[in-house]
Amino acid sequence: MFMFHPIGYVRSPYSETAQVPRGPGTQHQAEGVLEIAPELEEGLNDIEGFSHLFVIWVFDRSEGYALTGVPPTDDRPHGVFATRSPYRPNPIGLTVVEVLGREGRNVRVRGLDMLNGTPILDIKPYMSAIPAEKLRLGWFAEAEARRAKS
Amino acid sequence: MFMFHPIGYVRSPYSETAQVPRGPGTQHQAEGVLEIAPELEEGLNDIEGFSHLFVIWVFDRSEGYALTGVPPTDDRPHGVFATRSPYRPNPIGLTVVEVLGREGRNVRVRGLDMLNGTPILDIKPYMSAIPAEKLRLGWFAEAEARRAKS
Image (cartoon, rainbow over all chains, first blue to last red; front, side, top):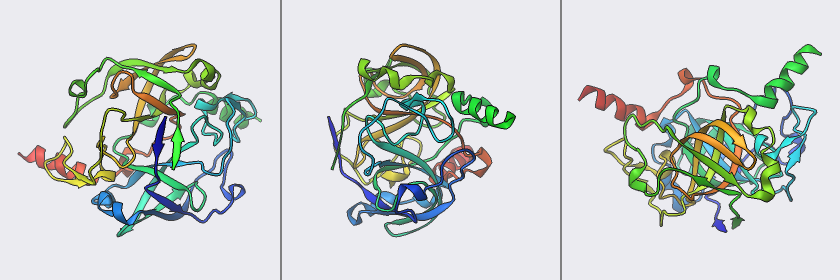
């Protein structure tokens, strides 16, 4: 068993799950702040040089998990590890955000899909991407193809 | 405080940190297996349709943390959240792997940089990438430019 303390919290415009855009074609453009604990501020040095960051966080308002679920982008069930469902064995979220700027321990970002007050576990620089032409998107691509036909 | 149980373990060719390639130009090509707990196997359904996965894991053999450190790809110090250092306030790792196949609860993958026996916390599908031309890489790009000049 592993225990983690939040390194900070997300300041987001969303106070309830229903406000977070989801489903086909969703683009996350919400802006907000990653507010890091004062004693960890030094750990943010040079972070503003990166255009994008990975934020690892906790679905702290999600309870329990289901090994199979129907995601909002499909009408068929898939295994939880093949989806971004909040109902996971470990309720950990991962979001790529764009860096807008940093003031001390506050990192301003765009692309939030977390609720206000979400605990942050870690932040990492986004250093390389898999080229789009090398990505296979499994059920997600199939669901998009079915939607395009209908 | 948040507590997480491993969902499984990494089977990797690396048994010691010194064996994991690091430093400028490193490409992770190591193959191995994400071995998921039998009771969670159903959660892997349809995962083999994705070409790439995010693996969230624990640096279980790293002790303590430093808010600033010199990464193997540079000769200057940077904040821990702007690096992939194992010495993090929460020792959580994130690796993108390529899916080679799945047999039951074993997902064969390429691109491991974890040690054998590393606890896995979560697996998520890699669904979209930031286009390379939109990425700014801060200290990492500067270190690469200095190396190219020298």
